[in-house]
Image (cartoon, rainbow, N blue to C red; front, side, top):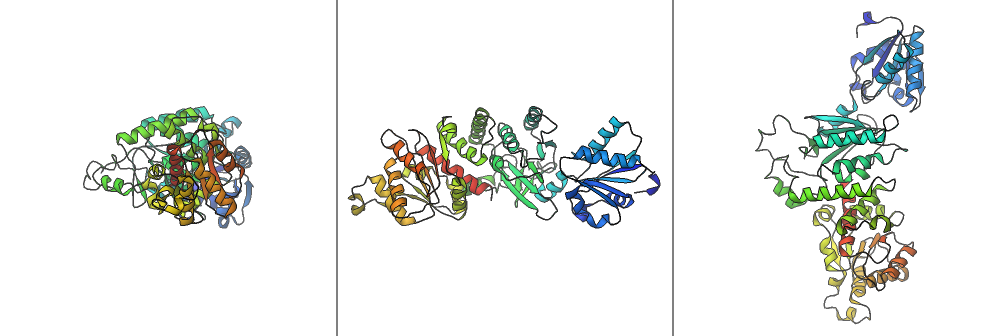
Amino acid sequence: MNDSTRSPGTLFVVGLGPGSPGLLTPDAASALDAADVVVGYQGYLDLIAPRLAGKEVIGRELGQEVERAGAALELAEQGRTVALVSSGDAGVYGMGGVAWELAARRETDVEIVVVPGVTAACSAAARLGAPLAHDWACLSLSDLLTPWDVIARRAEAVARADFALVVYNPGSRTRTWQLAALAEILLRHRDPRTPVGLVENAYRPGERVEVVRLSDLATAKVSMFTTVIIGSSRTFLSRGRMVTPRIYEAKSAETRPTPDLPGSSATEEVSGLERSPGEWRHSPGDAIMAESLAIIERELGPSPGDPAERAVVRRMIHASADFDYADRARFARGAIASAVAAFRAGAPVVADVEMLRAGIRGDLAGPLGVATVCGLSAIDGDAPALSSGLTRSAAGMRRAAELVGDGAVVAIGNAPTALMEALRMIEERGWRPACIVGIPVGFVGVEEAKGRLMGQDRVPFVTSLGRKGGTAVTAAAVNALLELAGGSR
C-alpha cells in the first residue's frame, strides 16, 4: 500500500482473510503496520497477535460490531490511524459495511479505506474443490438484522434459479433451526443427494472439512465459523471434491465422474458411468422422492426440535403418508446417537420378519458393513425353537439375539410378541442391543408391548404411540438411521 495516500485521521477496515498468515494480503499487512490502534473481535486479534506489538489494541466480543466500529471511528476522528479488522473480506458481511453506515450517520470526514481480503466463500471453496466454478449466490442465515421471512424468500429464489449457494452464519448456540429450515426450502427444488460442503475454521487450527448430502444438511454440525456450500443441479463429486462444471462440461463427454457420496450403491456408481455429471441425479424416481420429501417438510413446518429425530420422522411419514407420526413418534434419550454409533461400527440389524429385512436398503447398509438378520429365518427347520411354547416371531427373536449377541440394532415392525420377547431377554438375560426400533402394528398386545418398551431404561429405543406402525414404517426409521450414520461421517 502506498503510504503517501494516507492522511491523519484514517480508518483502515482490514479484511484478514480466513486467518492463515499466508492468506493475509500485502495491502492488509501494510495497513496493519501503518496503524497505531487496532480494533476488532478478540478472537480475530489473537490470529494476528505477532503483528500487534507496540500498538494500542482494543478487543471486543462477538455481537458488538456497532460498538467496535464506533470506537474505531472515534479514534480516527481524534487524528489517529486506526485499523478495524474483519475476518474474510471486510466488505462481505464484514465490518466495512458497518463502518460506512455508522460514518454516514455521524457525518464524519474521516477517510475510510476498505482493504479487501480473501472471503470465506473463496477459502471454503478452495478446500472443497471447485464448487463455485459456475454462477453462485451468497446468503447469510443470521436473522439478527434480516427478518427470517426475507431470508426465506431469497433462499427460494436461489433454489429456483439453480445457483450454487454459499451460506454464511449457518448457526450458533442461539440460532439452531435456521439451517434445517433452509434445507427444507432447497429440498423443494433440488435432489436430496445434492453435494453440500461444510468447512469450519478454514486454514486455521481446528479446520474441519466435510461433504454430505442435501438430505443430511438439517442435521449437520455447524457453528458460526462454518461456511456451507450447496451445489447446484450440475455439481458432482470427483475424488471426494465438489465440482460445478462450466466451460468444459459439454466438451468432456468422455469424462464421466460418478457421485461418491455416502449412501451411493454399487449399481448407482456403475450406471453413473454412462451419464454426464449433470444427469446422474435426475431419474423420475429421484424427482418423485425429492418432491415427496419437500411436501413433507412443508407440511411439517419449522420445528425447534432435534433435527436428527425430525429426519427419522420424515422418513416414517414418507413410508406411510401419515402425519400422525410427527406427534406420536417417541425417542429415548441417546437412541439415535447409539444406533448411529452401532452402524458406524458395522453392527447388524436384527429384523423380526423377512419383509422388514428386505426393506433395509442395501445401498445404505452395505457401505457401512451392516448385515441384516431375520429372526424367523433363523429358526426355519429348528424343531426345539418351534416347540418352545413361544410364537414363531418370539422364538425367532430369541434365536437371532443368541446369534448376534450384544450391540445390534433391533427392528420390530410386525409382531408385538417379538418385542415382548426382546424385552424379556433384556430384563432377564442381560441382552443389550444398541437400540430397539420397535414399531409393531395391530390390535392385540401392540400398545402393551410399546408401553413396556418405553417404560424400561436399559436399552434406548425408537417407537410410536398407539396401534399404528408396521414393517414399512419401521424399515423407513432404520433406513433414516443408516442415512444419518453414513451421511455425516
